[in-house]
Each structure stands twice: as structure tokens, then as C-alpha cells.
Image (cartoon, rainbow, N blue to C red; front, top):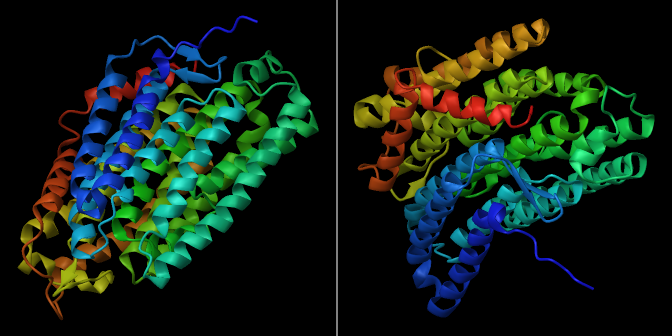
Length: 481
């Protein structure tokens, strides 16, 4: 029996990261925990190389492994965002691991393995490939949440994430099995063929889609599957929380978009109402639940739930313009969130980390540069022009209006106004309140670099928006051939 090897070129970035993570694991095993910093920098280099491989791949869509894996412009854009998020997360962890005495070489290796899973998710062109990528990512994230073994909060966060994650994986698998049973295929293109011309979907397919959406909504922390997010964000070590808030969020939303539009694009009417409901509920909960928070990591958890709601407006629209809006929104969200978590990591009093929102009081007097960057991130998250966050929401809302989702667009604007309260409250604390106990000085160099890079992107996005807009447009077109 002759067996031909699959063409590996489309999957070179994933293969490279898998091999690099194995090499980093061996290096760590032989050199011990003293190699954590070395493994971290090598891991960053591996992510940079993976980004380089992606940028040199041909623009035309390519499939491999029996059409289960696809490399196209949409996937490349999302993968680059994931790589940027993962790389910055490792940079943010360097000083934290040392000062908290938890230097373990496994940390950057777990980020590499999770990133490999995320990239597989983004390129999944089949329900089986989707699940494999999702589980490779999830298993790494469960360990990362509880990596601070002597912390009760971190252990609790890891356990909650694991139990609820297993539940969501079961729902996703059940939905996939129903879809396979009624469509007769697991491949996205073959499932799509069954509905060409807007054919009527059977009740079994619709129930399968509902379970699939439930599983994906958990991974994106969309309401009503958000319950794990605040506890996991608060309990996990701060660099882990920063990572959770950025890279897995981008990968899960990209997977959500591909899994809905590629196989089920012709029967959008059967699932559009579900996405509209999830989007609306996420925006409302994110806006109102964050108001009462006193811990800044819990506030960022509810903020991320709200931002997922805004991004899902683009999916509810189901158009090329909607997908373009999601990608622009995600690119801006990555920068704003990484910068905010760099500030949170710089919040130290004497020799301890602090996470209370009130601990930022008087920051403008003791750390004027840090306060300025934090104010920029808060205004941008609130959607104040001309900062980057305004443009993210603008393109999403325009896609909703052009798709005649007027109620969803109006709700998005109203929840943005409500959400502005807790962002502007932080600015007020920094500039107008007195500090009970000032934060320690100086800020670590690596955190300063991340704040500066992400801050400049956030502030100056309106000057050079064309590269991001053009790349997002090309990526969106790949899903609408």
C-alpha cells in the first residue's frame, strides 16, 4: 500500500515551534531552574523565527494533512497577533519569576506549547483538527494557571479552569459529533457543501451548532460561559493573567470566526441570533459588573468579557467587513491589554505585589511616565478618540450598521459609555487622589519597554493606520473567496 507524505510547508511555523519547545524542555532538564532566563530568551527567539516563517509563506491559501489544516491570509494575521502576545508575555514574566522566587524553566516552554496549539486552532479546517489544537492549548493553560504551587489562590484558579474547561470541551465534542452525524463529514469545506445555496439545516445540525458555540464561547469567556474568568484572572500569577488575556483570546476568537463562517456561512440565519445574544450579554455584563470591582485583575477580567462582546458584533454581522473589524479590534486590543498588564506588574509596594485599584492613587506624582501610559490605555479601552481603541470600536460598529444590526450597534455604544466610568475612575485616582502608600521606584526596564512600545502604538495608531487596515482587509477576504 503506497502512502504519500503530506506537504509540510503550510505547517512549518507549527512544526518549528513544536521542535523548539522540545529543545527548550531538554535544555531546561539538563541545566535545571538556573536556565529559566536563558530558556525564556531562546523561546522569544523561537517565536520571532516562527513569525518570520509566517511572513515568508505564499499569500495563496494552502491546505495539508488531508485538508484538515489550512494556511491562508486570515490565519497568518491571527497567528502573528498570537506570536506577539506570547512573546510579550514571556518578556513580562522575566522579572516577576525572579522577584517572586518561582523561576521554573517550564514556564516559557508551556507558553511555546500553548502557542503551538493556538496556531493549530487558527488553521483548523476540520472539527478533529479544531479539537486537537484546542486541547493542546488548554492543557498547557491549566498548568500555567496553577504554576505558583505554594499559592492557594493559584491552585484554586487552576482547578476551576480545569474543571470548567473539561466541561466546555465535552460540550464542544458533543456538538461536533452531532454535526458529523447529520452532515456526514468533519471537514469544513465538505460540511459547507451540504448547505450550498442556502439549504435548510436539520434540527440535529442546529443543536450541534449550539453546543459548538457553547464550547467556543467558554474559550473566549463570553457570557453566559464567563464564570471562570474573574477567579482565574485574579488567582493566576500576573504574567499568566496577561498571557490569558491576550493570546488565547485572539486564537479562540479567530477559531470562532472560521468555525462559523467556513462550514456554516450559508445557514448564518440559523446561528446568527445566538451570536447576537452572546455578544449583547457580554457587553452588558462587562460594562456593569466591573463597576464594583476593587481588584484591578478582576476589573480587567470583566473588561475582557466586554471586549469579547464587541468583537462578536463582527461575527454576528457575518460579512467580510465584520471579519475585518474583528481583526482590527483584536490587533488594537492586544496592544492595550499588554500595556495595561505591564503597569499592573509594576505595582509594587516595598517587596510585595499589590493589585488594588486604590493602590494607583497619586501615581501621577510618583511615576508620571507610568501614569501617562496607564491613562492612555484606559482612555483607549474606553474608546476615546483619537486613541487606537476608538478605531477598533468604530470599524466594528460600522460593520454592524451596514449589516442592519442597529440594536446591537446602539447597545455597543451605550455599554461603552457605561464602561467608561471604571476606566476614567482609574485616571481620576492617578491624577487627583493622594497616595496612602506610594508605589516602589524604579520601574523595571523590561516593563518600561513594553509600556512604551504598546503605549506608542495606542497613541499614534491614527497617524499610521493603513498597514493594519490593509492587512486585516486581506485577511478577511480569505474567508469570503
